[in-house]
Length: 127
Image (cartoon, rainbow, N blue to C red):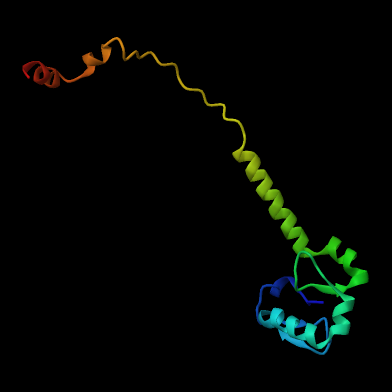
């Protein structure tokens, strides 16, 4: 299982223990590549391990998978993100209470001509 400490969880240089061979300690940035190689080298161990559905780097014994899933930090992160997005969608889909103000204009009556500058009216009359 991957070693994690709160203060260095994002450090790509931290050392992570390989789930296939406890003597392997790999830099976090290389860990996914190492998992692929060790899975091929240790097929018996690979059959006994299950992959966490929230983080493919989490390989745990099959008997411990249910417990791992209920306590996985990545699960909490995903659930929080889903909650944030659901809240955002509810806010976007809320019904607007805005109403258009009443309109007193009637463009068919010709009252709009009174608002045109007198110069335009003179030009149209002259020609």
